[in-house]
Image 1 (tube, rainbow, N blue to C red):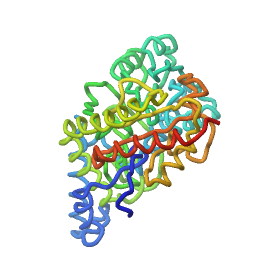
Image 2: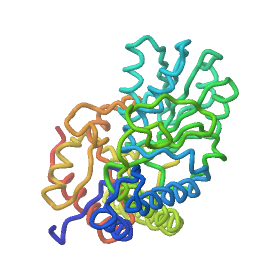
Image 3: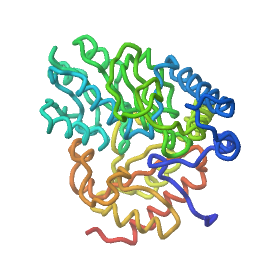
Length: 379
């Protein structure tokens, strides 16, 4: 890789933590036994699976039997929403917000097509879902409320504890897509009161293709994948031991360094924003109560795609919004939901710093954006 390359799209994926990589190696090259087999060669894999589950549970204040390993955040979200609906013969309603990740919105659309009612709540101009809005919509005929902890595009952190309390008071389950937040902020599932929580390892310096779904003890969910009896009979398929081990190590590393990482990310943000303001750049930062390091910027009268490609030519990787929407050029559903003015919305990029970024890189990005904006006429 070019030494001058600057990666600033950590909300899309992150660099694998070296300690996670080292922990994974034995289970790829030597201890490759199938954890479901009864012979002694599988003992190491079984123990590693058990220890990883205990580690992850402890880090979010859950019980080991409440952690179910999946292929990532999208599967966890699909499982929580679809299994909740299909477990309910009364076909009670699901409530979500308009700014959820596509894996939540598409799952909701799928159950809706099968006759399960879904309500999509509005958010304010900062992307916040007001607890009062949920109070007005929820009834005793609501089965599930699903609201993300931190938005993947604008980084707004929701008042999940308040929303979960409302849901539970009405007898509904509460699920949160915490893919962007796990590993980047302290999370105590008992304190925030959620019934289910989704996470993905590659968002917190773990390997791709693995994640988990926390399911509070007592919540009954149908399996999303049928077959073998893995994951306490709830998720069939031979366990990816190496990936699970890497995920646990990466999460432990990030949580142990959370305070240091948070301060570092806030410093990077400040360098970036100060650099733009010093040059009189006309921009809006989207969202409020942000997850540290995730910066959504909208530049008046500019084109986000042009900015992305010009930055790419300068060796800087950013996003125009959600990575899952990278093939779309229209204004994202999140920016539409917060009712951002079109002249700003079209000029939106997302810069998401990670723990491996430097202050020099933040300054480099600010200078590059200023240079591009000065040389690019408004469309």
